[in-house]
Each structure stands twice: as structure tokens, then as C-alpha cells.
Length: 138
Image (cartoon, rainbow, N blue to C red; front, side):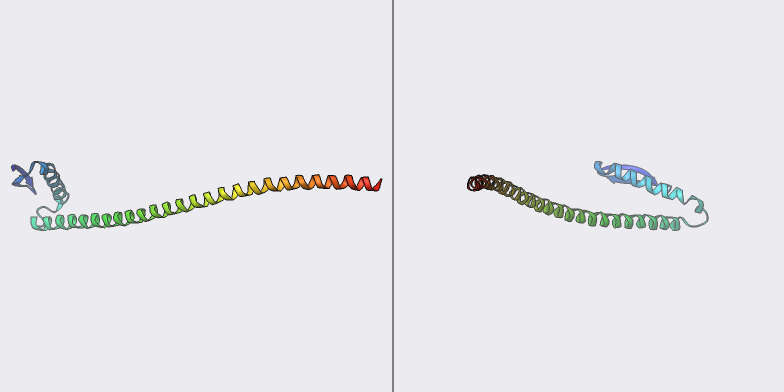
């Protein structure tokens, strides 16, 4: 493990870290120092412990907000998964309906062709009947 010297709240600290943690530590130190500077108007008016407590409260509130946002995200992901399942179900249902519609359309076309054939036969019969009638009437 390597060591790094940082300044947190104007205090020098020597920290041991693993190489993959170095940037996270530096970022955390920067956040803490930025928060310390944000309360600079209180330096000399209240104790450093009170300022550190205010910073801790603010950071804890931020952590809680992050947790709430994570919970909302998880709920949204769950809702999203449920909606995806509903969409898949509706798509399958729609595909089945489309298959039925195509089958009915084919049946209708077949019936229309048959009906057309019957109409032709009826027309021929009517024509023959008219001819017979005309022959009888003459």
C-alpha cells in the first residue's frame, strides 16, 4: 500500500491507500475542502467541530438523497421491466390476431370466389331460362 499526504480542513493527514483508490480519495478530499470553504464565513465565529458537524450533516443529507434517487431508479427499472413484458405480451397477442385476420381474409377471398362462381352459374341458368321462356312464348 502506498501513502499520500493530503490536507483536509486545513489539517495535514497521511493516508495509506491502494492504487485503485487514489483518485477516489483525492476526490473525497476535494469535496470536503470545498465544503469547508463554503462555511468559511463561520471561521472564528464557531468552533471547527461545529463546522465539521455542519459539513457532515450536509454530506449525510446528500447521501440520503442519493439513496432515495437510487430507490426511485430501481422502482422505475422494475416498472420498465413490467412494461416491457406487457409490450411483449401485447405484441404476441397482436401477432395472433394478425394471423387470425389473414386466415379470415383468405377464407373471405375463397368465399368471394365461390360466390362469384355461383353468380356466374346463376347468370347462365337465368340466361337459359330466359331463352327457354322465349322459345315457349314464340
